[in-house]
Amino acid sequence: MTAPLAPVTLRADQVRTRLPELTVIDVRTPGEYASGHLPGALNIPLDRIRRTLPELRHAAERGDVLFVCASGARSENAGKLLAEQGVRTATLAGGTGAWAAAGHDLERPAACDTRAGWSMERQVRFTAGALVLLGIVLGLLVHPAFQILSAGIAGGLVFSALTDTCGMAVVLGKLPHNRPHAADLDAVLAALRSH
Image (tube, rainbow, N blue to C red; front, side, top):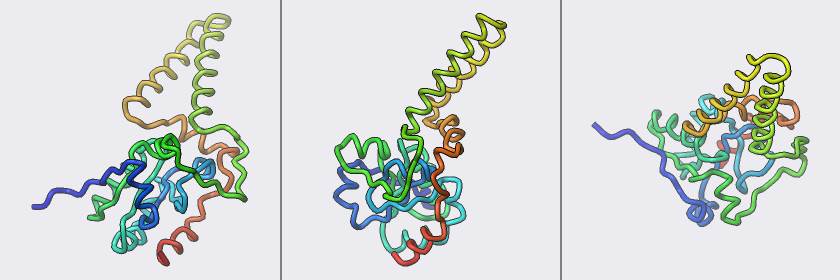
């Protein structure tokens, strides 16, 4: 019995060296993708990966597939999903954050207006802080039960840190200003087939 495949984790410098030979799949939302992605990356949001399994399997047969997200958690999930299908992939340690921190450029679509102007991380910090403050103020002025809102947000932040996921980012990503356009999955699939 063979051991199950696991995604290989690559550092930003390793990816930079191998970038021309990699098929890079960014699994973030279209709004996050539009805010800056690795050069040449194709956008397939994590919730649509299953639909693209045949094309991703085909791409992996021709060369290495690298999954990328903001921090590495979603890309690791995508890699595990393909590993279950017997396809070996790689992930970028630390995601686009680590890529940018290493001084590498992010590509931004010229025709794409993210309208939000704030990164998803900044939006999450603002929203969480505003909700905690609102819970405290309403708890003091209206009814103490409103402090449950602050406790719920604090609990969500702890859960987010422990699991390296962010439910609030998922919710905020669905807002109109964070969705400049839907991911053009048909164009991405055509690009994968011709790669």
